[in-house]
Image 1 (cartoon, one colour):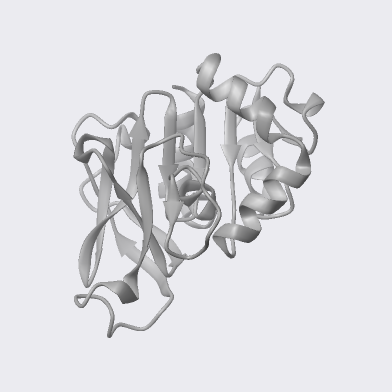
Image 2 (cartoon, helix red, strand yellow):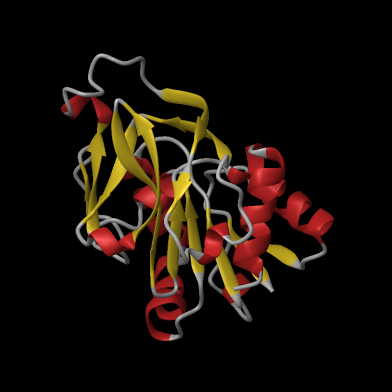
Length: 204
């Protein structure tokens, strides 16, 4: 069963609806008990980094999520701010992230190559998957996804970059390490490209 974490951020219903259409069982998790039996976890998120971490802590689900992900090795997919929460730290806030995938979240405005571009980076953009990434199995070379963000994930380990996109600079728009995955774009808003990626995650 796919469990979509509902801690007050992200369009949880969009994921549930899409998975139902794809023929996969998915449910909403609002408490630690709701996570019982999770075989896959989706961690969505929108808005500011510190606010997201605070809401996740207040939900009471964080200790259970850490057990499932770090000890039981249940696959998790962080989406948008949910991906950024996987990092250790963020330029956007002061609170530490989950630290499930080593890296830091940087602002586009902190790099001269992207500082003069309109923010947030919003709309459709081409994505270049790295060879062998299971999230992008079956994708053609012209994969496109919908983005809405002003910060990007910088991996400590280059091998954890699963895909890149360009906005002034080339940035990691998908990451993976072991059972931990993240995408900066919104697959639930990305038509058949997003549906294929969510299907790939469900079939890991």
